[in-house]
Length: 148
Image (cartoon, helix red, strand yellow):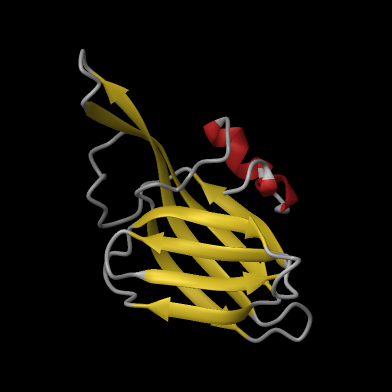
């Protein structure tokens, strides 16, 4: 993500208040995606993402604790050029890349969920809002034994 572009996202502080920074979303899991037409802000994409921090531990820093588990709900407005591939029962991502796109495609942002498996999702949009951040580990998660 371009340096500090996240500050153009409405409600970004809901995430930075928990993590202390804007995370890369590395190894996050996309739990749900909803695409809707919307007469005021449409079309829109809503995404729920399980985000956490990986904290290295041990002498060699080769093991990790997974902390600050949260379910982040983000709403993307005035969405175009949607490309969604292979959404299934687990949708891990390497990162969530949000970049300035105003000069190229007549949209403010380009959004790419860089999939760590076959999953992939990208689009352009004009506005982004963090709707909520819930400190929680999702049901049926492989991280259910971790601490929040």
